[in-house]
Image 1 (cartoon, rainbow, N blue to C red):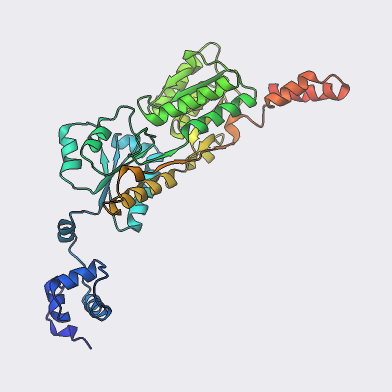
Image 2: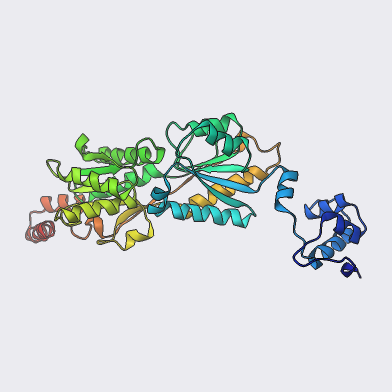
Length: 385
């Protein structure tokens, strides 16, 4: 029986390592090894120390432990956006929550950092001061000085929303190009030929991938896209509303528009409604992300689903794995490059219920018998209704 009650304690205090060592009749270093799960401690000694720890509700001083381990157990999530932009777009709260959940599972803390000005002071605070063990960098720019500095300083990080040619940079991304390609293909198969797009900011890799995938999809289906049909947004609802207003002035007016994020698609829908037009009867709309609000818009939004929660969780878990690797294993050859699949979610805003597919149109043109006449009449009614 261990006489743990022999040590006087004041209310609201906890034991030190030295006091635990005295009660267990061992050295301070032995107590430290037990707390840090060192296997080189005899089972009986380990059990005796843990009984004392539990009896006195001991927990390590986080600051002292971080100093001793040269680790803070803090991970930074860097987003190059203003605060109001982040919380106006449902994508970012979902991403932040999933990163935080993964950190919590592994005993780490998440710190949100908004890098609006890439200055030396920013780099020094985030990297050289070592306030954080590693960084998750979201929405990476095409020419990102910050990523270059992280590489130069050999600071652990993971990129979200960007694929890198370098094998030593861990990346987690959704298949933006393929998802946008699917959106283009779907609109053409519904019979639309005048199809526009509102892109994200074209200094960001994800926005470029979605634009290129969409245009590639149209080209593969034999559809040309005039320059006036391509409007650039900045992920905000307001920018898409302005872009949609410009598209409504184009001649001829687009029949359909692919918007590079659901948050921007909400702005496009409002611009269409404000102009006295209807979706999808006058203009079909397809978004990207599949945020919760997409299913409740009027009409419900056809969109490309990307697994936002999985992106954040995998990014944090990948970074923590990198931080906890043995030094001999933590080299660039082991960097992970994960691309998660995207999926087209068809709802009412694309007009699928109103328009026959291109295949159905071709069949209607080629039918000449009486049944074919009736079929063509049905197709005509669908197009004009």
